Amino acid sequence: MQRALQRLAERASASPPDATLLPRTAGVVPQVLAQLRGPAWSLPVLAEHVSRDVTLVAETLALANGALYRHGEAVVDLAQAIRVLGADGLRRAVARIVFRPVADPRSGELAARGAAWLWTHTDRKAQLCAALAQDAGLDPFDAYLLALVHGAGWGVVLRALDAAQAGPALHPGPALAAALAAARDGLCLPIARHWQLPPALLRPAAEVSRAGLQPGASPALHHLYLADRLATALGSSSGEAGPEVATASRPTSAGTPSPLDPAGTPSAQTPTGTATLLARAGPAARACWQALAAARDAASGAEPRSGPQGAA
Image (cartoon, rainbow, N blue to C red; front, side, top):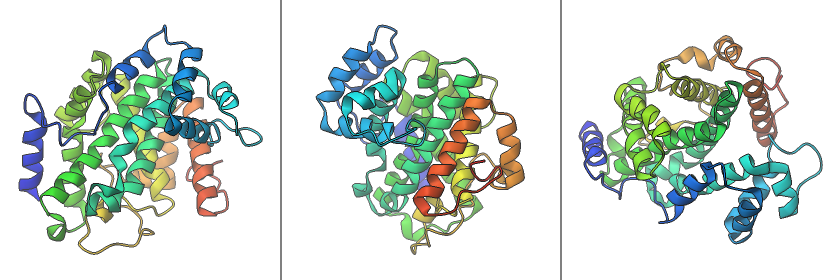
């Protein structure tokens, strides 16, 4: 496994990097993302682009009916969905489409096992990171993109292990979790460069690749760290399987609690640890946590929970 991960790091850090490793992109996507970040990108133009793409229409409707935006009856009309989401919500819908192929279950056996967890965790982390940035008066969309880029590293790591046929030799545990997390963090800058993200996002991506995911001096790194911890806690409290399940030589029950905590803070998976993390967050982030926890419980058929592990 170590040889496969070392080879992955070498190929990703080469100049230019091995593009076959990185999340696939249509030729125009980086330009579209750059336009979405620009101040001149108007809501009518966004709406026109949405209407041309059936997949984007479906994503827009799904997001408008999600826990963060729906506050009444179901949204069934595209125009209504666009009004509900606004420009920021539409930017997120486009970004979700861009990065969703990272979790393509056809990528290989290991990537297929981890696909569901990968997208759920990354999507939660991106929403929480955007809310943390909003509380701090920073650009939520930049934070959203940075979290998506960071989460994309998981898919690259699992596909590389698939290509090396390393799955049968892997043994889930703390050592494996740490090795996979280090490999994922090292890919943050190569993926950000591959997607031609702006310097404001390349700087925190470079710091993650250099030092790993940990509280940093910049607000962007601090928000990414907290968002990852909170997203991990959301999955752990409901027994969702993490990527260490994907690397088991035999399929592990999806109901097994995930011990994976890349930043080395297992206390984030306890009610007390989660409460501490939420105490550092502002109102938008706490509201986001509550909505995501409620959506998780509704999807699993569980009764809504109170306290930091639930949606109270």
